[in-house]
Length: 318
Image (cartoon, rainbow, N blue to C red; front, top):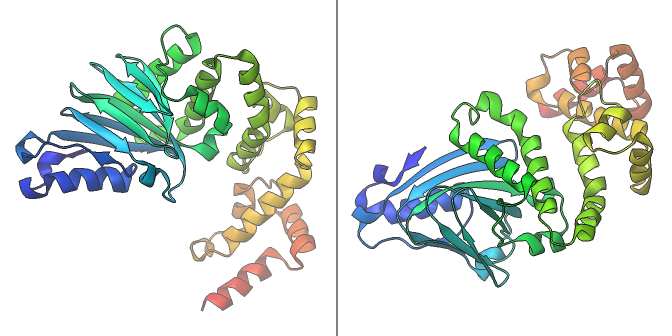
C-alpha cells in the first residue's frame, strides 16, 4: 500500500509516476500542478503472474503513447474493473464507457487512453499475454469494449475479480498464489464468451489449446498425480483429443514429462542453496516417486549420477 501523501510535496508528482512506471507499466499521467491536489492511493499485490492493483485518486487521464507501446517490456493484458462512478477508455480507435461493476481489457503493445474525469476508483488486473494464450486477433476484437452486463460468464468474472480485489485475506501471500491459474482461466473464458462471432470464439479456443496444455504441464510438472486423464479434465477435452493435440505439437506426454522433470532436477542440483538437500527430496519435488529409478534414468540421460553431477557443479563454483 502506498499513498502520494507520503512523498514530499515538491517530489509528489515524480513519486506517483515513478511508482506506477516501475511497479506496473510505463504511462503518461496527468497530474495537478498544485501538489496538494495530488491524491493517489495504490494497493498492489501479485497472484503468481497476475498483478492486482487498486487505485483511488483525483480525476486524471492515463495514456500509453505509441512510443511507450513499443518498449521492450513483457507484453501484458490489462483488465480495468470499474468501482464507484464511471470512466472511459480507448484503444484501436474504439471507446468504451464503464459503469460500476463493468470491465474492459487492453494490451500494452498498443497505445491506449484511460479517462477518469470524476476521480479514479478501479481495480486493475495485469496478466502476461503469454499466460493468457489468446490470438492477437481475438484480443484486438475484444479491447475497449464494456464487458460484464448481459453475459453470464463475464458477470461471474466481474464478481470474482471484485471479491479478490476487495478482500485482504484473498490478496494475502498465503492464499493468492493458488488463485493465479483459476483467475487467468476465468478471464480467458469471459473474453471468449464475449466475442461477437461464436465461430471465432471456438477457433480461438482451439488455436490456443496447445499453448494452454503445455503451460499447464509446466505449471504442474512436480505433481505426482499428473495423468493424461487429469490434464484432459482440466481442459474439458477427452484423453484421445489430448493426445491428438500433443501429437500436433510433436509431444509424447511420457517422454516430455520425463525430460522436463530431469532438466528441472539437474538445474536444482546445480544450485548452491540445494547442496544440503537430499537427492531423493529433489527428485520427489519434481515428480519422481522412486529415487532409485530417478538416479538410473538421470545416469542414462546425462552420463553421470545425480551425486556426481552435483559434485562437479560444486567444484566449478569454488
